[in-house]
Image: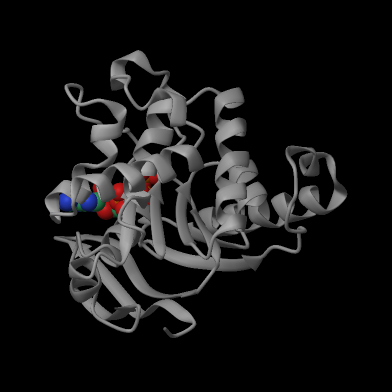
Amino acid sequence: MSDTVVEARNLDLAFGDVAALSNVDFTVARGDFVSLIGPSGCGKTSLLRVVADLAQPTGGTILVNGTSPHAARLARAYGYVFQAPALLPWRTVERNVTLPLEIIGLPKDEQRARAAQQLDAVGLGAFKRKFPWQLSGGMQQRASIARALSLQPSLLLMDEPFGALDEITRDGLNLRLLRLWEATNLTVIFVTHSIEEAAFLSSRIVVMSARPGRIVEVIDSDLPRGRDLDIRDDARFHALAGRVRTALRAGHSYA
Ligand SMILES: Nc1ncnc2c1ncn2[C@@H]1O[C@H](COP(=O)(O)OP(=O)(O)OP(=O)(O)O)[C@@H](O)[C@H]1O
């Protein structure tokens, strides 16, 4: 597999008169944790949806794993985590996670083994027989991450997965996600509104601005791997968050 997971050139996406994306160049290397950050309506979700083959660009080119987004989708190259957990209330947590595996016709014992592995990875092993409504919001979102990972994708697309959660729960999930990423070869593209979240999680931060949606700056993180939440008190963290804030402000005044 090549080292480039996503390669977009001069990408445009228009909805009638609205330019959701304009002339976007976007590259994601294998193993990166890339956050997309920007004001509401700047096209973060649109860019994620183009990668996922859920929206078709009106201009430019994009390759995912060296193929079209459509071919990558058919090859189940990515898992997608939405802002809301979107679990089926009548299925247990385990059977929500096995759903994609049922759809591809995996044998039952393999389905259960994979679900157990992914639920353990998100710390929900003991809750597999519960129903979604018996879990907290944070636990539900962990279950939806386990479901997205059940097909063992190399790419995880996350659209503000923790945006609706309280700050303490979000901190815990951020740490868990970071550890998961560090322990695997996953490439992650993560949409967020939060400067802190982007600075804590990412190896690279893509700052976007609105109308038309475009990339203002790409910032590489120099924070060490294996970092803890305490890194947020570190001068390097403040410097990184400051760079993101400055880029967001520059993008805003441009509009
Ligand atoms: N299906 C659609 N039809 C028409 N306009 C759309 C559609 N999807 C998105 N847009 C417009 O495209 C622009 C970018 O939207 P997008 O949802 O990608 O932004 P975003 O940065 O993810 O916003 P938010 O942070 O609020 O989720 C917005 O102006 C939005 O109104």
